[in-house]
Length: 180
Image 1 (cartoon, rainbow, N blue to C red):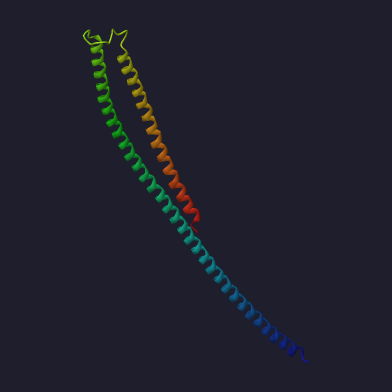
Image 2: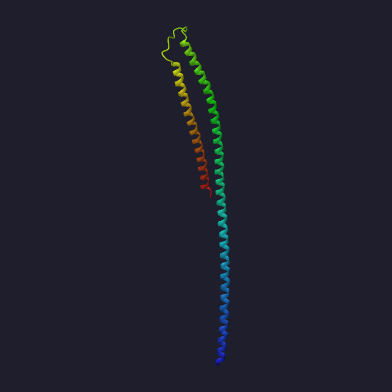
């Protein structure tokens, strides 16, 4: 065989091998680009789904927060209404108390006058003013009872307000923890 012919054959074979390798490399590159594109699409889809889920969770959190704020505002309004009713009841009780004290003092004064009147039969002379003393003791007891009632009313209203706020917050948190 002729060395030139062998060399031509070798170069031709080498050319076909290189063309084959180039074709295989091009096919592998195309497959790699397609796989990369698919991975990019999946990643973009996963990001979109994660963003959508985060948006849903944020909306749920905002809704729950708004419900808590609305419940708190409603409770504050009820508490204000209760305090107004309580203040009106106190004013009515004070007015009744003034009338009762006036009536008690008038009765005590009439009793003193009857005791001091020598024409009143079988009453005797007063050693001191027992009716006045009783009226004074009853007046002081009534004033202290009013103070204690005011304190009890205030604490009862505050306790009810606190309990209602806790119940609403607890229900909202329960609802939030049970939502998927």
